[in-house]
Image 1 (cartoon, protein in one colour):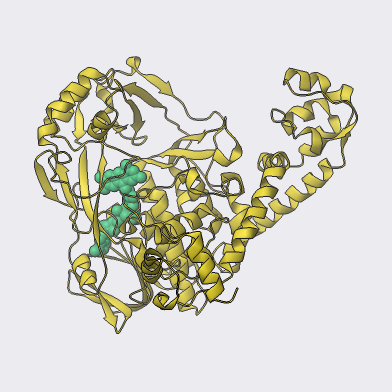
Image 2: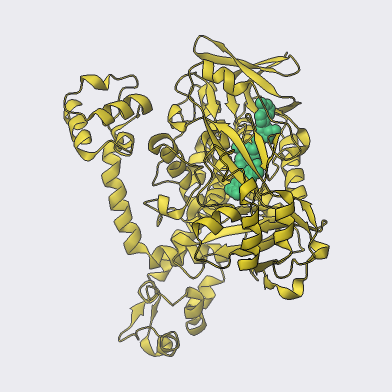
Length: 619
Ligand code: FAD
């Protein structure tokens, strides 16, 4: 059998990004997945991005990953969420055509000659000492590689629940995967059980749209990728409806057969993405819950009911739908269901996503206890990069919390421990004013280019953009404006008037004022702006308007970086440090932080413990 640099196990969102990154960094990659037709399958909703998740996709794109481009190519609706808030909160989201999404990912991967494919199920990993050297498959084949990345998603010992019915499966209609968990447990890994769920899909021809609120995408369609991508012209709206007390009553009739309430589901589910039965119980005072009716694609009538995830018996789901406005005659294509699967608590990983226990073995995606395509894709990208770096004898790439949401995600996973499926929120990022979707390329593209991932074309575009931003910014510091030229405009915008001649860079600090507004009143600015793209103009505006906040945040970052510069030895015996609390000793031994900054973020390690470590290590 051929030998590879990297074997990626699993062709989900993590696996696709891992394979692409490894291959684009020059490695020979084998992607082994159980079903080639479900590569990049969206197991749940046909949408990418959303709050904080949209920022992650922008970061993946800035690094040269595929998720942004594929979403742009296949999106049938785009919205920038949170536009009314500050730019740190703006979050892109797109509905994608589910079938085209898979097709576009397959085309992208298959066009890369560094990637080979094999449809099979990996049953175990092969090791030599404490280093992984290959995998064995259900067909009895052995493949060898220098690095292995496991991205098995919801498939490890997956069990599907619909009411009292239990089926083995990794996703509805697909087999689960056995053997890997059992073997890794024997090698000393700890595993746990989690669960997630999905709503029913219904026949769009049986919906009464007259009853529903329509939600269109943005008129000026945005995009995820910093590169230009061809995209579908046809767009589709979503619709909104609500449950009501009658629907809740019907659902309650099924509670006695609910795997969630009868204790048949042992795994912990995502609190932030609860099933409809969970919502009825937890928010008993609410008499309605919102449901988004989302198209699955351009060439299908299938509809996804976002917000109506359920594992109640199929007949209860069907009966409840009939009481929802607009869905009275709705026919179901597939019922909702819950799935339980094995995951590996991520404290067992280094920040590179390599496992502590077995060298050159990486875990990425839902296997690490996360939920969501974006979180999975981000980990896949980093695991792919770091597997390639290992092969090239280079230090791993670790994005810091002040550099990227991806950095926050991985840092949280390995240090904070997870008790429920982890999803990203803007509130998890303490430096979110720096981690905006608009500047992901300015933060990450150069770094990615330097490690040989971002393409020359992407890098050149990025350099030109940086230059244009600097140029426009400095020219705004030169153009001045007289009060009588703009005060009528400022009055209309309910902003303080100018009392004396001012630089545009000062006038723009007023919250409601945009450069495009000012250009209407200032011909010199108007002609200047015609030389720049909307993206550059928007970037300059944000950088000027929020300069004070950004500067303050940078000072905070500098402070925390001092901790990060103090490296800690990997297999250090924390028992010998006098004064550390027992909890700190236990957590530091288990998580093996790479530096003092990481140690300070471990839950249970308090500031007193950090002071003791500083003294111990001579600072
Ligand atoms: P997956 O997308 O699951 O891909 C895993 C891949 O690995 C598959 O291609 C599989 O064939 C392959 N594979 C597995 N084992 C092996 C093996 N041994 N050998 C070879 N190949 C293997 N996310 C949300 O954010 N919100 C939700 O509400 C939500 N609901 C969900 C509901 C359901 C029913 C499911 C199944 C998932 C849901 N998700 C949800 C999760 C979302 O689908 C995942 O987070 C995301 O797909 C994880 O990506 P991944 O790459 O880690 O794994």
